[in-house]
Length: 373
Image (tube, rainbow, N blue to C red):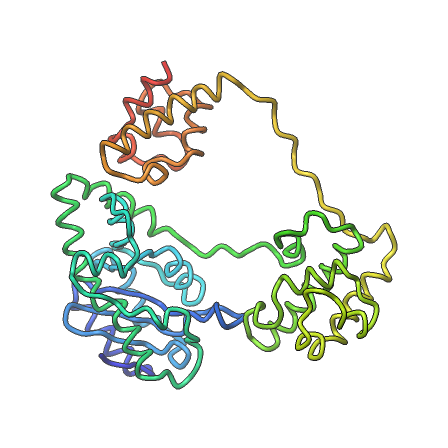
C-alpha cells in the first residue's frame, strides 16, 4: 500500500495507471461527520498495488483524470453511483470504462449484493466494516483506517473477474455492458435549496402554522451553526429536538427546560439560541406564517389502467422468477405504469419509453407487448 500526499506521488500514480488495463476505485467522504461532504480519500488498486490518495492535501487530480476517463482502461467500482457523483462534483472527473460489481451481482440475482457479502461468497474473504462511519476528514488518519480503506478496493479486481465469468456463463454480460454504460453518465445534481428543507422533516404534518414557523427558524439556526462548525447537522441537535421546541413554543429558558423532549444538556448549551429562534416565529404576523401546500389531487381511479398494470406485473413477476432476479430490479413499478399508459404494440415502441433498457426488452419485451393486446 502506498499513501500519496503530494503532486509527485500523484504523477507517479498516473504513470502506473497508464500501464494498467484494469484498476479499482473507491472514495471515502465525511458526510456522516461533516456539514461539507467532500472526498477525503481516493483509493486505487491495480492487480499488484493499492494506492491511497489524500485528497485533502492533493487537491488537483487532473494528472490521473485522463486515465479514469479513457474507455481503454476498465475501472472497477462497487455501487458506483455516489462515487461517480462525488468525483464529478469535487474534481470534474468521470469514468470511461466502468465495471460496477454491485450491478453485476444484481444482474446475476444475488440476494445479498453488499461488498462484504460478495467478497465473502466469491473470494472467501471477510471484510472488516468497523470504520464504515469513521471521520475521514480527520488528520492524521490512523494506520488501521488506512488499512481498512485499502481493503475496499484491493479485492475488487478479483471480484470483477469472478462476476464477469459468471455473467458470461449466464449469457448476461451484454446486459451488464449496457447498464454500466448508462451508469457512466452519472453526474452530481445540486439539491434544492435549504429554504424549504424543514418541510421534509418527518412527523410534522400536524404542526400548526405558528409551530411550522418556529420549526423553520430552528432549522435555519441549526443549519447555520452546523455549516460554521463544519459538522453534520444531527451532531448539533436532532430533528426530534427541533420538533419538540416547535410544538411547545417556549418563551424563555424556564419553559424550555420544562419542555418534554428537550434534554437538559441541549437546553443548557443552546437555550438562548432556541428561545431566540422561537421568538422570531412568535413575532410574525398571521400573513407571514408558512402553510403547507396541498399536493395535486389524485386523478379518479382508472380501472382499465390498473388492470393493464396488473397484467404487466404478472408478466414481470413470472420473468423475474424464471431469471432469478429481484422483481423491482428487473422492472420497477413506474416502468410498468409507463408501459400501461403508452401501450406499445411492438418492441421498438417499447424501447421508446423513458429509461427502458435493451436487456429488459430481451428478457420480457415480447411478453409485455402480448399482455397489452
